[in-house]
Amino acid sequence: MVTHVRGHPVIDAAELSIRELREIDLLDPNTFVDYDLTSLWRNLRHQSPIFRHPHGFWVLTRYADVVAAYKDPRFGSDGGNVLSTLMAGGDSAAGAMLAVTDGPRHRRLRTALVDALRPRTMNALAEPLRARTGELVRAMTSGQPFDFATEIAERLPMGTICDLMGIPAGDRAELLEWNKQALSSDIAGATEADAQLARGEILLYLSDLVQERRERAGTDVVTELVAHRPEDGEPLSDEEIVYNCYSLLIGGDESSRMSAVCGVLAFCERPEAWRRVRDGEVGVDSTVEEILRWTTPAMHVGRRARAEAEVCGHRIAEGDIVTLWNSSADRDETVFPSPETFDPARQPNRHLAFGYGPHFCVGAQLGRLELRILLEALRESVTEMAPAGKPRRIYSNFLYGYSTLPVVFT
Picture 1 (cartoon, rainbow, N blue to C red):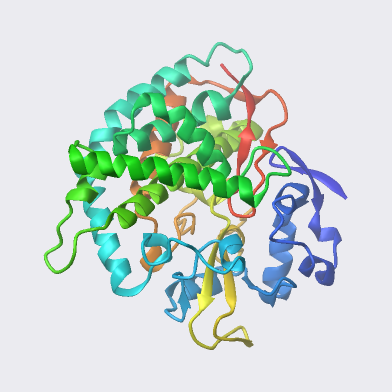
Picture 2 (tube, helix red, strand yellow; picture 1 turned 60 degrees about the horizontal axis):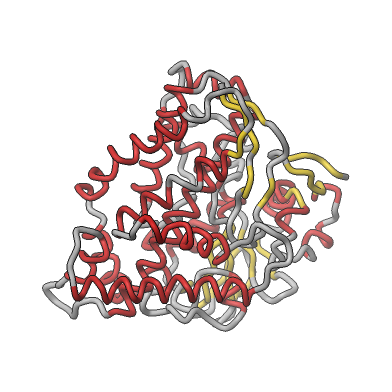
């Protein structure tokens, strides 16, 4: 059965048996375009909340189990935190990048990044971001169709994270194109080799940037990381700075961009929800949280079992790959009443869009700031928003979102 979900024609996975659901290839980016996995996750939460995928990894779908795994030190991230890298044998950044490091090394890196992203730094970004966002939104309120994904969403998070890192304006378009290929693709058929090439280009660029900051300090986060001198340890190496700047660049752009696009799509499809936000019946802060829950840009997080464990009666052996599906947990009916309803007033809203526990995203404050400022600009300038064509999904087994979103703002 073919339906339309979030603007895209998909196959309703509710028509499939549990046996067939287990055989859906969660490694294949096309799966997340061709199927409405809402039904798949619901069926698995109810009937098989943990199962071993035919490719050899475990799949967790319930909120409580996902949160428990986030907190359990037996499930480590130092072998990788994305399914594709775990299946390939591990992540080359393990031990150097915060997201794929555990224990004392993780605490050391997190302290450096939290210091560099302190509130004073975030607050300094707010006014330039507010001015840029307002200008972009006002320019698109003529009632003519335009692509929100490319004309607005692509220009905001990338500009902000590049401001944060002191990256020259002339380099940003190329970095954006590499970013869009590193964890996803706008087209079907992109290969892992394409993704590796894009990631390599970003790392080379950042390596040069770190060297420049060592020779000539600036007033940006890269300089902060270069200058970081902990009281009880070594300063960060070039490798550690490069990998963590890479993580900031990828995460700061992709997750915020996808959330912005999916939020506007939700409002286009639900005019009454936008009216409530526009007229002030619903607050901006609760709307930000619901957009994050609704989108959940990082669909899964991967872990490797350091020791034998038991989850839902199943034995997980040491060395097994375990995937925590945030996209399912954020639709768990036991935590989120009417989870398939987009409700900007939803409270409480303990979503997992930024992860949970020791690996909670260090850029969460920036992501929320960007969405909040976008909503304020839309509320000030846009009376109505409506779809002007079919959006196009990105191809990824990790990121959820759209590469295009034709809309009309009036």
